[in-house]
Image 1 (cartoon, helix red, strand yellow):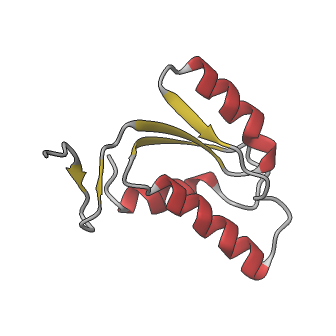
Image 2 (spheres, one colour):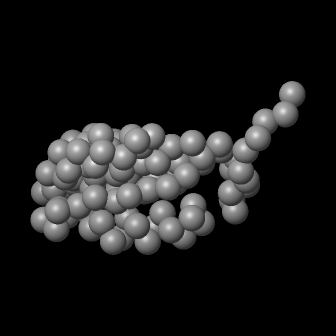
Length: 102
């Protein structure tokens, strides 16, 4: 059996069949959802955190968002933020970009 997939720089393999609209906070969920409904073939992740977090909680939320965007089955990511969140959209974008998921 053949499996048509893409190999990532880190060796992980995925089919890259998802365009992910990734909200960085609870406040940007509605915007991410609306974008996803307008872009055929995309999906969004509902995020219930990203604001008013500190320490280990903040770091875990940030790590979870980044790793979701790095999933080998994600072919493209649109990071959505409103500017008020603690989890900075640009930081998320840069961390995902380092993975080489362009």
